Length: 103
Image (cartoon, rainbow, N blue to C red; front, side, top):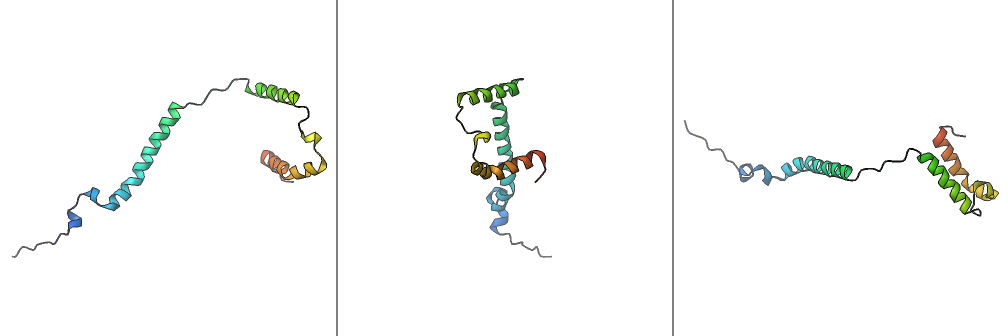
């Protein structure tokens, strides 16, 4: 019997990192792993501040202080009819988002 020589071209002799499709297949997941490690680093090194237990009361106090400082500021009660009509779509959207009821 004669021994047959198999013709192997150069692309089959190259190592895996010489092929573009290998980088395409492994590059995406590798980028995701690197991005997740960066995200974990940012989350651990920049922790969220702890809020005060009485944050709600402090917010009310701030609102009262601001209301006392600017008595001439426009409040919803001091708006003209045209200004109230201009705000109507926003008020409806806010009420719909809060209650789920649409008028």
